[in-house]
Image 1 (cartoon, rainbow, N blue to C red):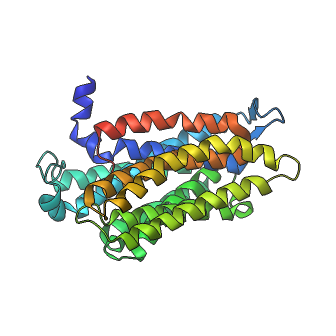
Image 2: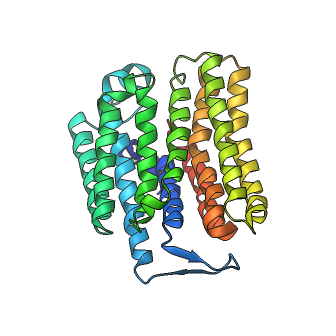
Length: 312
């Protein structure tokens, strides 16, 4: 059964390992929103009666939105993939262009309708994500700056989707939405060298952005609470170390390899999965290490899927 799932072209088209990273965005956004309250023990959690249902709909929403986005990406890239990645479902003939288009639209519909089940703000954000992903897939990806920016806005909006569980929180924590925007900008910028390689200068720019995010998240933990800021930072350290090993070390290797395609591809794959670790590190600031570990539990699941399905 598992082998059949791995070979299923519809599942391959959706990039399941990436969808797990989108779940991490939602879980972090949910923490930022205040929908879940952490007690001083940082172990016990409390929530309103409708909280689990809202979380379910938001996770379902991001599954549809992310899945729809990558399906439409392959739809628009069919001609290019026929040359560079002929093994993919559309160029290989396993799924027709028409089928892929309808599948992408159906996934988008699931994403938007699920978000509206939470509240109208979540629904509007989901609709915005549809527009942003289509803009990237059809036009922006071809631009060296606006392509990565567009993709960063998609992820920032996905975090906003999680925060929209409590709409008022969107105005209280706009700073945190900048983190996935900048991080995904860097990943997308680096990923342009996956096929033909890239200059070391481009990789150093990406590395600089990673280091900046690393420092910002650390400082935010220290500044988050006058009494417990140091404790929060200490709790965050294991996540930061894991982030460094997972994301930065592969990029160092790509730089050492003079920007050759294969090391860049691995660095990008690692950075995409690293979204989970980054979100867990930030979650420490809001709900402590217990909730952060819940998010981190997505990491082995995503890594397993990344071995079976394409990430980039």
